[in-house]
Amino acid sequence: MLAADAHSTRDPCWADEFFGEEHVVSTFQHLLHDSPKNVEDLSRLCIAAREDSVVLAFNIHGLMPFANNTEFVFPFACMSARQLQALRRRCQQLPDSMACEYAVDMYVLKIAPDNYAVDHALLIFAASCILLKGLCQTKTLTRGFYQCMLAENKELLVFHANAMLYSILNACAVRRGALREAMQLLNAHGVTVDLGA
Image (cartoon, rainbow, N blue to C red; front, side):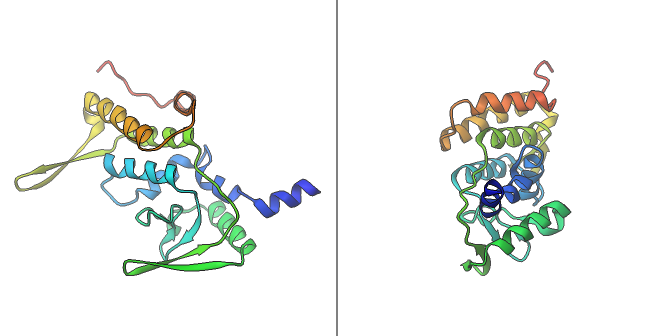
């Protein structure tokens, strides 16, 4: 009975519905919901996920799990019923809220004792899945911009995958062994890139 009580007061399960192994790739895709998605946006998201704790912050559009990076919003319209229920259940457990302003908008932050952080291996796994499945690259031309899918050029895709991982790993400290665990997750989920093309 004591363990159940401790679980109900801490209850990190709401975040597991978004950042657990089963959901992390989808969550990252929804946080990058603005199209077209590019390598720079993914890299900024990964660094934000590494540097910030996950919080219960909301604007009128959805969940802003990294309150210091208000550009990343998981829209309510894209959430599953389980995710919405997990958010509602956790919000009901936390009576204290704080309203915060940024630019011309505002968000509500539920004050929680939790210190939930995205697992480093899952962060690298999600970023690799999204990158290897085909992000785009923006090129500036004299008459505007040109978007090309990285998946169309395997050499370019491998270059960006390595550059992005290097950028993430050097921009913020990840725990020892996280890269190896991420590669194991990629293999377990069958996410690979053909380097022989």
